[in-house]
Length: 82
Image (cartoon, rainbow, N blue to C red; front, side):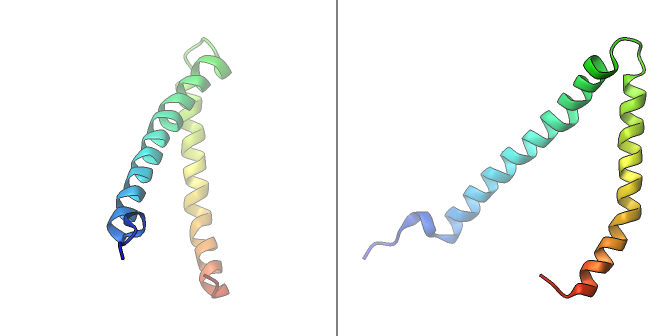
């Protein structure tokens, strides 16, 4: 009886690693670079304030995340759900 090589733990870890590499590359290239360039050049347009507004938007979203994340984490821990 031969074992199916597609279901071995090593192969599954390798495939998951490839997926994670591709997903990380997408996030870096599209979200970090592509969206900021699109926002600066298309949404805001000429004038040089696009970088300021993009930085402000990212800073505000991270501040909101820093405030809300502990509250949501505590609610999740309190609910005892997986």
